[in-house]
Length: 352
Image (cartoon, rainbow, N blue to C red; front, side, top):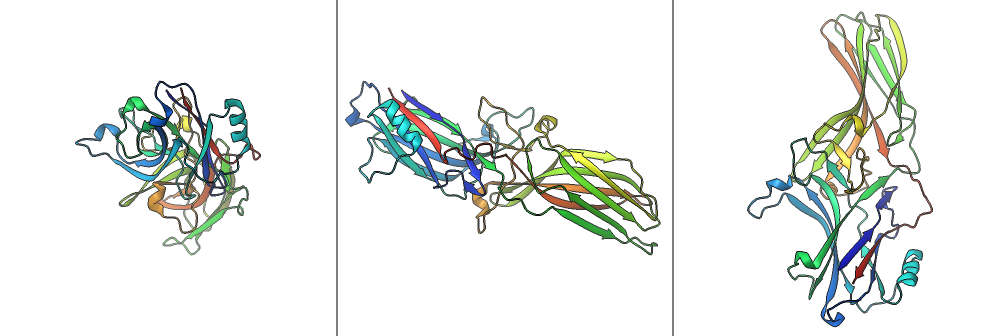
């Protein structure tokens, strides 16, 4: 019997939270009906991008692209130089005895985080998105055909933590000149900060200077999610995740200033098909996808889905319904709850 136990893989400041770029896997031995000298146990870590629904897979063709695959032999352990043990490894070996075999996966830092595109009410099968899977199996060699009864699969997830250092307070402004008006309309917006955590309210300060002979009759402020699908061709999907409309009127030759507060929540967007969400485990709920932190020189095709957020401020002007708008980029991610936690993900593989 193969048993896998795991935790969550995290990403902090653009680096995998295992700061040495490793996943630690532990193997414990037990009683077996098969001679240990005749059986090898391998573990495979796969990061894959599914870009089509599972029920559309036909004739052996799958809408899936493997972004990263790594294999390691867990048992018997290969003869190689011993590596220093982490505190968690030491505790597990002390608990499980001499039959515990630690080993590692080397993971590139540019792998994407787990992202799932929210399916529609009538969609079935596995949703589109990027996921990580750990598979342990018994075989004579790693290339051997794997029988389902000799393997066990475990879905894990990689999540993005917010950078510790925030940038300057984001602002944007635009000026619009109208026909038959000597002076322009000026729109300026600013946010209280650049980085927000999931569920945190976003305050936008909107300032309008209307020196035209037109009237601003409506305002709309929204937080929009942008998901760039990086595969053969890049496609972008955008979806509002929080919206507030105002009927405040800005008369000609007057000014206006107001603070709008919006809070993006998944609970208010569960019916929107194609919305990017953080990858989830079966027993847990999830949230809106975190912003993708791009590293310098990163290959976008490996990232699968690039998620970003922007605050959009739109003014509707009378006499023709002209629109004036601007966009401000923000970063939405998870708060770092425990900075002292050990920087790796751990598995436990038991043979019984």
